[in-house]
Image 1 (cartoon, rainbow, N blue to C red):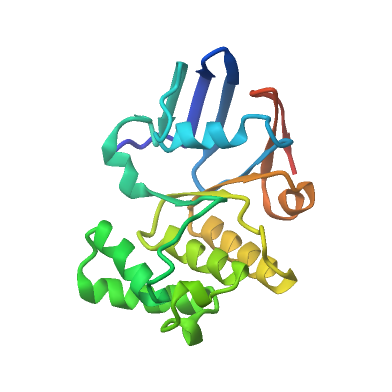
Image 2 (tube, rainbow, N blue to C red):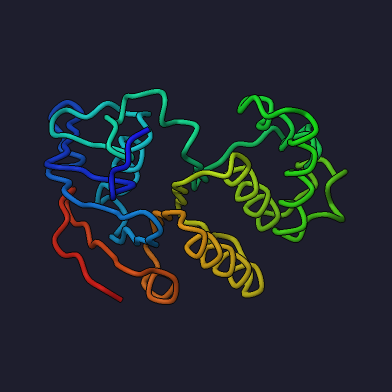
Length: 220
């Protein structure tokens, strides 16, 4: 296992779709245990950048590494948790069934999975709703069950795409508390957002991206 100091490291990462440059020159690094904000307007290349980090989109050029391993190395997938902005969950499943499905995908032993699912439902405030089908969940509840899914495998890096979208103030506070706990446990958190206020409250550093290129990285 790589002992790289960085959870994420990219150099001149680039993605072109036809004649459109979605990401022109992404160069950044995220340390282990750091909460890192990725901020920019819609269309700035944030989502494409996240997809490249997750190996869902192949770069057109440049280099990228998670924990010192190339982005296309399948061995790092089990060390990453991800909450997408536009999720399409299996709405015919109950909350606990949904989490069990993902636990099975991670090949967690059943006893361990049941214990972990119980802990996470309590963490995100959904214990009382575990037996409800996801179609009965509000958008905020879906956001919270999605966050639980992202934490199932006890990842070393959590990538959150607009994690407070659709949440009320209590829900946003809950997410911030979870992120702080992850930081204390040495987990790196990469937050893709367009909300400066949330990033200022939560993150250690922030990268500002415009036209597919990081224009500034600042301490908060």
